[in-house]
Length: 130
Image (cartoon, rainbow, N blue to C red; front, side, top):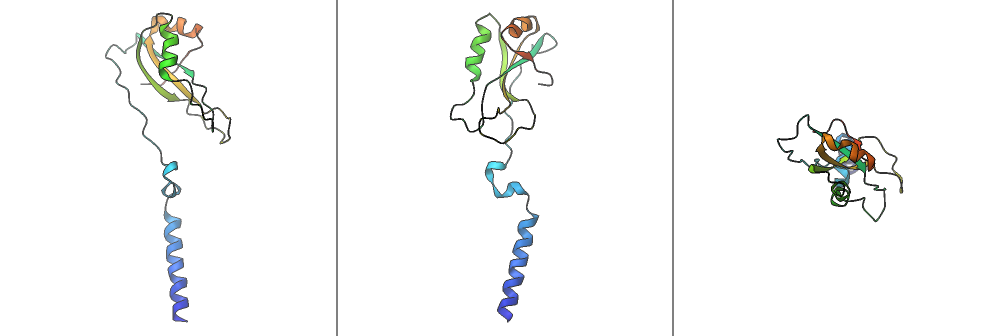
């Protein structure tokens, strides 16, 4: 009888302990990762603008999205100088389903005067990037 009570009490304490842990404590996969930081040149002021384009990455796909370097070559092919580049997210919630768009973008800091040339290639201004 004493053993039964001790076992019941142990299970209760253990169960309560797990209930108090945050959900991400159970899976390292769920823990957030720090975003990559990019050194932005001192020339990055009102004369420059961030532009971006979807990298085409899909959930569960073996292939990754278009790399920064491949997409940078698109901009450089029309003589656009890239001041900085980084992977960015659109920040929107996404459905967790294979084949769904992941919302990842390749972002590039370029001279404001080249924004129209970038737009002709399908790039859009990305506000709020620092």
